[in-house]
Amino acid sequence: MAYLTIAPLLAVAIGALLGVLLEAVVPRRARFVAQTWLAAAVIVVALGFTGRNWWDDTSRRLAGFGSVSVDTATVIIWAGLLVFGLGSVVLAAQRFAHAPGTSGVGVSSFTPMAVAAPGSVDEREAEAKGGEHTEVFPLMMFALTGMLLLPAASDLLTAFIGLEVLSLPLYLLTALARRRRLISHEAALKYFLLGAFSSAVYLYGAALVYGYASSSEYCGAIRQVGQAGGEVAGCGADFRAIDMALANTLGRDPLLLAGFGLLMVGLLFKVGAVPFHAWVPDTYTGAPTPVTAYMAVGTKVASVGALVRLLYVAFGGLQWTWLIPLAIVAALTMAVGSVFGLTQTNIKRLLAYSSIAHVGFVLAPIAAAVSVTTIEALTSMSAVVYYLAAYGLATLGAFAVVMVVRDGTGEVMDLAAWAGIGRRHPWVGAAMTLFLCSLAGIPATAGFIGKIDAFVVAWQGGLWWLVLLGLVFSLVAMVFYMRVVLTIWFAKAGEQPAAPAPEAPKAPEDASDDDAPTAVMQAVHPDDEAPAAVEPEVPEEPDDAPPASPVAGVDRVPKSLAILMGLCAAGTLAAGLYPGLFTHLASLAGQLLR
Image (cartoon, rainbow, N blue to C red; front, side, top):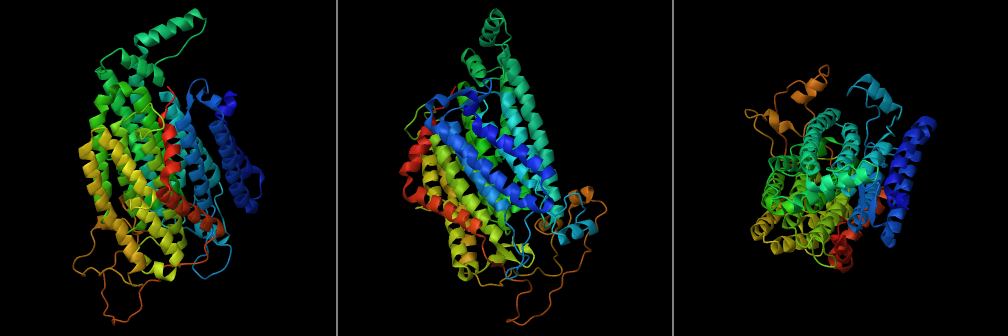
């Protein structure tokens, strides 16, 4: 029975190992299809086990030797992670022709040979032979295993294991982009270095909290019981032990406060909150688009779930210590994501700052800590669950649209090249408009209901000033969402921003969206030839001259991708027009197992 309780977690982990085995026994040409179907089948099986846990009340308990807490909140978060994971597998399985209108099997979003130097002969030969990295799918399954473990962990060490199992595959996946490989490598290096540092900070904090809790009277009593029973009972890293230790103290111990602060740094980094957000724009821009979508949705859901359990179950006794600082972090995150998003011209970078802003919005109800132990009511936990579902549907759908808007070289990231795409391809434009409206919080979408719930809970918790700031920055963020919508529907195809004057060339830091290697790239690839600097030229052209670059278009959308976009759009509309059922499901997550 205990194994059935954690069966979704075990199924995904076993599926990841089977994917590694397939790499050894299946012929190269058949691996892509085999790995795709294996990953999808494993997630469907895990969803079946999750449904079984939903209907079986006896599964609400601690499992895995007390290190995994399977309560209603865990089951709901697991279901969301598996659904979003399946959508990410669909994105990773797509193959596109080199240009709209061309025929052929097409290529995936991942490099044909990761070990080859960017632009080398080996890389070109591998691409000519149709090489593919099918190891992507086992890596995604390993990351999904960590995502499932992290929000369900009931002690600090299990949470750390989930954090690392989640992160390590993503470091590799970030570096596997087919286009702009130097930027992809730089993004992976930044993500790895900052991620390793945050993991070390988290582990140091866990050690300090363990030292505080293990020396408490509660843990002393537990050890006496264990010795009397002939066994050694560990204590200190368990969330219940931390909570009981806080119940007998004032919570002002320097060891406790320092450890708690370091733990929060480690988790807020994964969430992407300010001031630990610097990795998000570069990593989202450089990673392959399916991996970006996977991180933007899966990592956020898992990390926020872990953050809620840590704050409410382990450190609920410190609520009056962390409430205001967390609210300030939420306000800063809203501000940075919304304001910096105004200046972006790269669609993936724009969505990266969008995700930062939404982290601020979802932290608002967490900081309020309203009725965290009740069900069938609008609580902090129910507001968080609903918001994450609305954000996940819109973000996954938006990245699916990004994958289908292409030109002769692949995906089009420059927002100016999206001009008129809605008029030429109305269904694609309508889908992107719906997703952006949901992210902006426009009425009749899931994002609107999610923001209303988040702000109502924050207001009930006394954070009226945070609600007012949230409204202001929601309006600010709406500006760059609507700018994309206006570009899609009303801008003329081929319109480009005014070229800079020759005497005022771009500064080096303005080239973040270009292929020019930065200092970090040169350090990683010292032998790569940097493009020679060219003086800008402004040739005189007639007003009716054709655009210098090919206009972005949409070729035949694969059926699986069209179905994914349709489901995301349907979910976004259904949760916005008929929120009752979804709100009821979210309210059931208000009971956290202690």
